[in-house]
Length: 114
Image 1 (cartoon, rainbow, N blue to C red):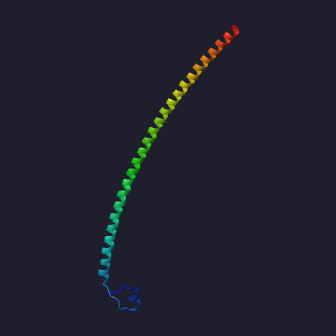
Image 2 (cartoon, helix red, strand yellow):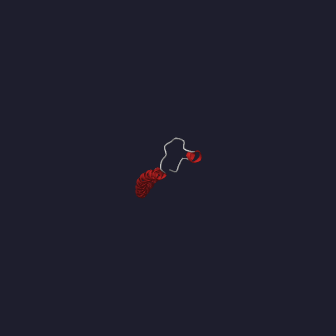
Image 3 (spheres, rainbow, N blue to C red):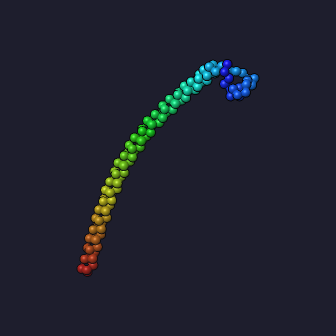
């Protein structure tokens, strides 16, 4: 047997169990292979989750854009309604002002004629 312990290699066997280098490397290879497969499975799950997140983000961005466009349309309608109402109110004020001025002019004419 070839010692794989650095102490045994330098100074002789130190009364611990000796293992065959080929068996030990095969055993370690099996452990590492198992851990590699487990890591690959975890990575695949993470990649699936990442893709799901990308899809969700894209959908949310599209929804955000649709909501923004909808709000812009509603704001434009509100602004149009407010502008129309403002014009109506200004027309009413203008009409009332003319009536009041006409009434005052009549009253003034009546007072002059007295």
